[in-house]
Image 1: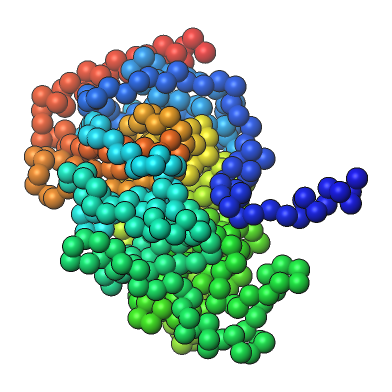
Image 2: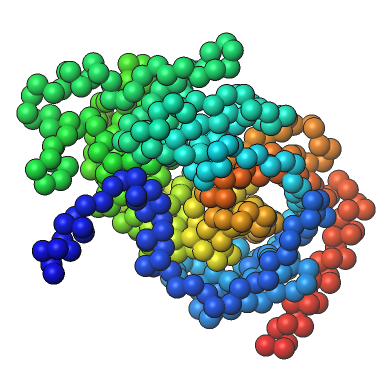
Length: 474
């Protein structure tokens, strides 16, 4: 029987493992909660909401606790899979007076044809790039009209995993282990410029046996090549960083597309990469770890070396995001928690300061825009978080309009002054249901709007009364 079964166990195709970066790991590390908050259908326009908070703690048993005014925000739905990490959103009543309100309303829905799962979203120069299957659809971010579709003639490339931009070039990572480079023409069409590694780079390396590495039994590849899906791309200081399910981090020079470094960075598939403004690279893997890479300028080191290993998650890490100055790192994993890391010299570069809980399933994507953190999850919701004056976070609002897991997020801040006493952000959320939702999120300062502030104080008092009533019943 083993002789019959073993060949089947050994043979698998990368195309059949397209969602392995999160699905198998989630099923093995997460126990589904038996209680679920009743979702409320989102109206077209939602009224301003207060800064509600999750009252869960590391020692509490999982459960649900909600009121009629905050059924989706005030919840303990997330199982406490990381009891050693304190919650960062357990705000007091005084902290709720942050004098902010948030509204969001649905603007449009985009459905690239043929209907396929949305695997990645990115914005650049007022254009929205949406990866669906092997195609990349380009929409105008203002009027949402379709501008171009490219890579639609090469179905052998597999699904597009990541898109990034540098020096007028568009870089896309694919299931077929390759990175493609595109150029936007004057007519807003995208033309293929190169495929990495380039033919020139291959010819330079293929002669010498030392340039080959074992990728599996009886099979070798050039060290400049990825041998599994390219899961993430990021750019910094004239360099392109790529990570793959082959466990490797590769550094490419943008000027001539030459691969300058390759590192076996993790013990398992790498799902995400992020780069700070100072060139520090963060990689996240199925091995539950986040690794920090950088150059040691004190020794004149030109290659990227391992600086630190961040270990707190108990399951596959799927997403990374950095704040504006790169001092705060957010990581989302299958353990349903978003961990917040901050730079601390005494703790080997980065130390975890707390966790944001509220999602009931795996975190699949994170972005940080204008002091707001957006998180998308396999529970089909998008949550918006903001940090308070005391360093703690609160969940501003929740959107649950998608029918399947939210795989990717992108956002475009509106110009300053477009909204009196506030700011607006256009948010795009892509899901496995093949639909892209377009939202307009407005964050207003209540200190400059007395009537609105009075209204929210009334709602706050009502909410606190209901919370106290529920506490008494418990």
